[in-house]
Structures are given as structure tokens and as C-alpha cells.
Image 1: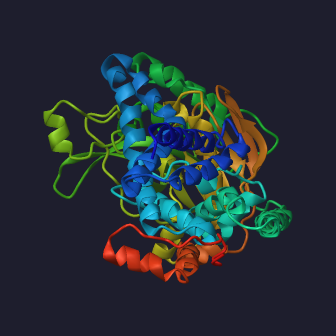
Image 2 (image 1 turned 135 degrees about the horizontal axis):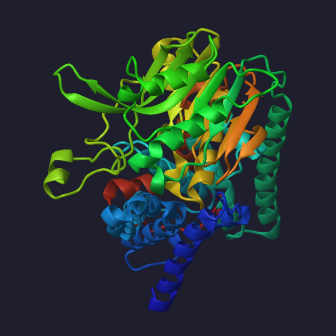
Length: 540
């Protein structure tokens, strides 16, 4: 392949990745999803060493996509700039480069399969969505900005996640958005028109189904009144010891703000107070007394907090927790406890911790030691509250998190409580993308979500992934008082999990079934010598 043509194909792959990433919040440039067609086009260009060339172009596409998607990763390292600031550029380069390896492997596999036309399109959707599934599961998993979550959450097209989940919707998104390559390939004008009509029909069918589902969203709230507290506490100054009294007082004042109806539950965000909660809530503590005076008898407080505990070996451990407290007429009672199960690598714990410690690396948590993961999650119940599933920050990325907890407990929750510290993400793309992913969890499960963060974005989300009532955006301070929206019946995804995604992968395999030479070529591990075919499978 001429060097110039090879360079053009590589640039097309890189540009395709960047364009696709611009479809996500806060950019919202949905035409950028055509970048997947550009990526597929680049992979199908001739090359002297096709599999290696395809892997390189897949990697370039991934670098473009993840450089835009995870650019916020530099922000946590700038919170304590003197200690961690030097790591920021390395974090972005290593994360974007590392995640791009999944796309490189997908591109190499697609090229090795060697299909074109409709089978090639379906194979592309299968290879890349399969790589995204692996990205969400390998090691601890990191499913940030799955392509299927590019549609604005709460829109008609996003409702497909209720059927097939975010991974299945990723397959659908890739197949539809890369389809121009198939539509414009070899064939008569009539065939090209038929292909375009088939793709347009699929888009319209998905949109119509999604719009119908949104119209059927339960509206009449019957749940308790919930107050979300957002105090707008800056992460860079939060951990100065002299600021603790002022931060605590701010949360107390917002929690006690007068309203027409007394909230049944007050929600503070993840890590609301910059201290280990054990000392603050110790019997006789003035902090405990002040909090007890703020809560009315029977009123509940869900507080994101850092707590210390002794494990079975009598070793002191630290947990990122959600603590449920209830006012008891001048004192407090513990009504529930959840310890975060999925921890952030490098942020809350260091992989290979002993080795990392020896070379001077440690996680970003403001604790003497890394956090310890809690047990597998289960829904919580408390007096006066419908059963709910806690979901702390990073856990909102994972499709099926609530479904797995419900199956473990044999009980489906009525809603999800998501507390998060998005102040780590800065004031640019990270908080908006995190909100978008949390809204997809509502669509998948058919459950409303109450979301509280210290600096934004805090809101209530209904069972179709739409925000309800006020939204406290970035840098806002205040409260939201709303009754809990109702859940809807279990969705297909909440019943079957990723089984529909597996069916879509099998559909891709079925599309290849008529191309026996593909499997012969794979078995012999040598480049295929394809006959010139019409993209719909007919030999001219």
C-alpha cells in the first residue's frame, strides 16, 4: 500500500475515534457517530500486512476516542498538585493508550475474519462491542462511555438499553452508525437504495419503540419526599483541617432548610465530610449532637462517609461507605450501612499495592491506607423507605450492577440511590458524562435514581432516564425536594442481563455462516483470497 494512502487511512481512523467521542456530553455532537463508519472504512483499505495494519488503525481510533472521552482523568491529580500533579499527563497518555489496545485487538480480529458487505458490517459490530464488553470486565473493568451510551440518556434511542443493555445497544449503535460503508459499497443503485432504506427503517423502529416506552413512564409519585443536598464544596480546599467545621455547618443548614413538606430522607453526597466518620459520630461527640438536633424524630439521613473498621484479623481497614442514620429525639440510630464494593483503581486502591508502595506510588484517597472493598452489594431496607440499591460513584458505570445485587438478595429494589464525588472530575466533561451513564442504569433497570454530588450534577432521574424537577448543575449550592418517582415493571434487561447481547453476537456469526471461506481462512491462519462479491453476498 502506498505510504500516502496508508497515512490517510490512519488519519481517518484517528479522526473517526475523535468524532465518535464528541457525541457524548457535554459536546452532544451526534453526527460524530458517523466516525464509526470512518473507522470501518479505514480498516477495509488495502494493506501489505493487513492484520497488523488493521490493529494499528484500530489503536489510532481508540487513542482518538479515549483521549477525548477520558481527558478529565488529569483533574484528580491536580487536586493535590504539589504531590500528584506530575502524574497528570502520564495518566492521560497511559489510560488512552491502554484502553486503545482493546480496539486494536477488535480491528485485528475483524481484518482476520475478512468479511465485507453486510457480513463485514455485522462482524465489525460484534468485534468492537465484544472488545467493549471485555473493557468493562477485564481486571476491575472500566466501561466509561460505551458507544451505546452516546445517545442522550432519556431520549427515544437510549431506551434500547431496557431491551439489550448498554453492551447490546453498543452493538446496535456500531451496526447502524457504520452502515454507510455497506450502503455505498459495490451494487446497483437499486440495491444501495434498499440498504439505505433498511438502515433508516431500523432507526425509525427503534425511535418509535423508545418514544412509546417514554410515553408509558409511570408519572404519579407515591414514594417518600427526598431532599438532595449539594453544598458546592471545592475538592482542593476540602481536606484542610480548619475547613471541617464550616463544611459541616453548611450541610446542617441545607439539611434543615424550611420547606412546605418535611423530607422523609435527606441525602448527602459521597465523602461529604473530610474526616473519618467514626470520631464524628462517637457517643458524646458535639458533632453527633449537632446532627441529632438537625434531624427530626424518625427522619432519615443517607450520608456518604469514610469510615474505619477492624477486619477479622484485627487489622484497621478503611471503607468508602453509605451510612443511613435516623433521628431519635436528640440522638441518632444506625438504620443501614453499605460499603462500596467496586473501588477505583489508582484512585481508591493501588493494584499490586505492595509493589506500588515500594516504588513510591499510592492511591489518591486522603486516608492513611487504601480503601478496602465491601462485600457484594444487596438492596437496603429501612423503616419508612422502599427498598433501594446504594450505588457509590464509580459503581454507576457498570451495567447490571443493580440486577446482580437484586438476584443475590432475591429482592428487586424500588429505586437506586447514587451518591458520588464528581468534584474529582473538575468542571468540564467528566461530571456530565458520569450523569449520562447513571441515567442509563435507570433505563436498564426501569428504576428511578436519586443522585447527590458535592459540586454537581445532582438530580432525580425517572425510570426512563429523564431528569425530574430541578437540576443542581456544576458549582451550584442548594437542595432539591421531590417525592420519589415510581418504578416500572422489570425490564427485559433486568430479567435476562447480557443474554440479548449474546444473541446479537450470534446474529453476527450467522451473517458470516454463508461465507465458508472465512472460516477456512481462519482455520488455516493465512490471508484470505476472496472472490469479488456484491456486499449483499451475491457473486457478480
